[in-house]
Length: 491
Image (tube, rainbow, N blue to C red; front, top):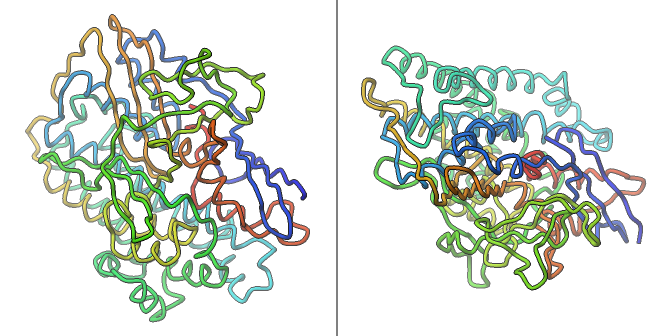
């Protein structure tokens, strides 16, 4: 048995280190370490409730809107208010802009450049991969980053600025949209659609969304295998065996997102799990969520207290000398079980037919995770067009939301990387406790008190290690398929 320590990872937000025990050319065990502590949950204690809306977006410069939405919903839960339809549509547009832009960043700047590595130099597709995705030079990467920059100008109109917009409040959005601005926003969405249809899919979003079977996907690929970057990804996925790489725990969680005025969610909440007779979706029970700090450099509580705590009573107190700990991340669990979260989880809970069949055949792997993010781009952008059409200039975007002196509130949403939850306890107008469970906290969790590895730790077992590799390319593919955001993980 040999040991590899991989890290720090490039093209990852924050610090990440993975320890691999290897034998016979494969990974036998993995330990995932978030080696940096930040302490936002401690910073928030004792602050006024509304201070959270200023502080929590600063957790991350990539998904600051997601953090704002979760914080505002926690306060809205305290105030027992629901934003008016215009406010819901405006916030959905902001959140979707950030999430879809994140999907582009992940695909073009984080995931695809790994195929330009020298280890693949003898492959017939390597020069084409370099032409498209070589960091700093790839033709398609440059076009995609320009499209991403243009997409973020939506947030200038919708929220005043990005990152760290202050327009998102418990009662809605404080940035009202007038009729002329709605026309300009529609033009920006058309521009974004044109990029996706010309470069990523080389097809219309409607035809991509109509692909509902795995064999139909491969027929679509075979029609023009070099056209569009998603078809090229499928070529590489088939050549490198991504369909069988990085299988997760077979259980996925989504809080659901994009609430509608009728009380439904555009993407529903639930827990998907693979069963011997087929997959099933269970209702999301938030009282089943817990965090275990047994292997974290954090206090676990006094002797005799529960090892795993619900976020309402969660603790975040550093214990850097704790024995047997190896990360600053806690171990979130649902009903005591390891779950995976992200775009694939959202689509499986929603019953997306193509991905449901792909996962039934291959499992939750690198192929299905990356495919889910690409298909979510095709799925959500047309919904953004609908939400923009539904905005009624002149009607309220935000309503007053006075907070009680004491109480507790929960705010759930979906960032690009997966499920994000904030839990706040208010006493005498001040924050007594604030707990955050981020998507990468779920996916990159350490072992729990029972010694059960987290989702990535399980996915890395069996990854091939080529002779002479000290940073195995298969490990890079698996880690990036989860798109880690370590600064959110350690808050």
